Amino acid sequence: MVTGTLLHDLAREGKNHALAAAELLKKRGCTQAAEIIVSHMDIEVNPQAPLSEAEIVFLADKMVQEEKLVSLEERFASRLANIGGDQEARAAVVRRLKQARQIAKKVERALGETLEMLKTEQLNHFLKEWRITY
Image (cartoon, rainbow, N blue to C red; front, top):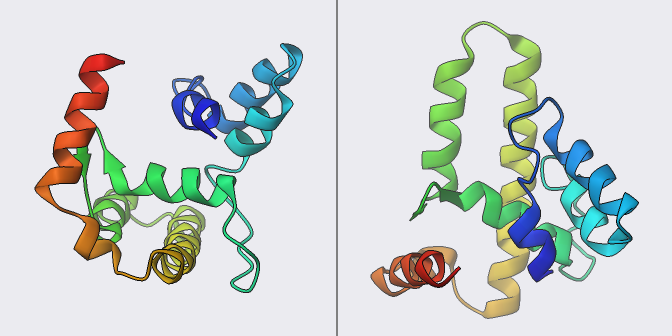
């Protein structure tokens, strides 16, 4: 999961970057990381299934903006505001928000507390420290 987390935006500048990064990693024998990366933009969520590594990376991708931990509402509000009249793009954003909310519920069940409880200065501090030591 660490590899998938660190490399999920490997090909971010290109079109369909999740697929491009996954293909690049598959060619280098990193199939498990590729499977996680390919689903970090869209993922099928089964609320009854155990929490998966791909779901954690998907949710983390949606809750971290640059170096800041943000709520799903913050992250998706800006996306929706910038879409304009493109109904297909709007539907994709709404679908991803729904997926992220489903995963957030699974995480909260697993942790026994809400993500808002975890969204603290301590977590933001961890993100800054991680970037420095990376």
